Image (cartoon, rainbow, N blue to C red; front, side, top):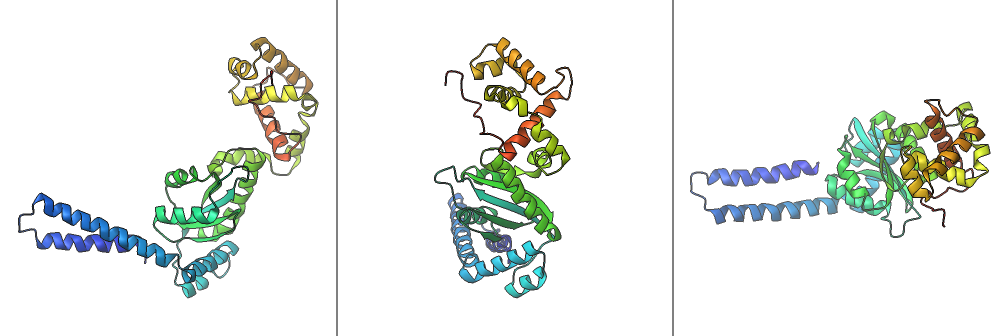
Length: 299
């Protein structure tokens, strides 16, 4: 039984009590007593519900359902045997720990936090480093985002029909790989946030061409750092010069060198997109150490 049903029954009980006393004048402190009692009952019922839902037997049932849904086989029969209802749509969360962050919340602890916030037990498979969480229905991910910001986890959220859970899970974990290789910060991401980067980094002739597009430029790390800073600053010469601690004319000079070495036309309106794409592919493939754009000339 969903926890929403339990809470609705509690509210119905209190409403019946108030209806029984509708003909009698209720003083302010009487209403306060009713509200305090309802808060106490709700808290107790919710705590007891979550304790039962997270019992070893129930957890093993949810893990069995998660395995079935993730494999795409026998989910209906496994769910029936475990007494766990299925739904047509799910929110698939691919979760990974950012090992560079100390004190990051574990996927297991995040699952408990999420269950308390969403108010329903969830099917999940996880280890200390990552996992997959399946939430029934399509949730407002703003709530999930609030939790993720407190965990230092990388979480990819993808909405999927039940029969698409295996492919959505694979996509989610591939996007985690993209986030890590491109040195993106921990947080909650959706497919749309990374769709361009995902497509650029898939194997194929396009990626092969982009992989070598900046080979001549990459021989000078200073040029690569300037290019990345310029792109990240929205092509603003003033911001790039300030960040690099150089004159704006120096920025112009370095950009002209980059265009010349890469054999690109500075008047081509698609120039910046080609450069951004080439940088994305190089970072994903780990071609040379990732340059920290905050590094100054003096350093």
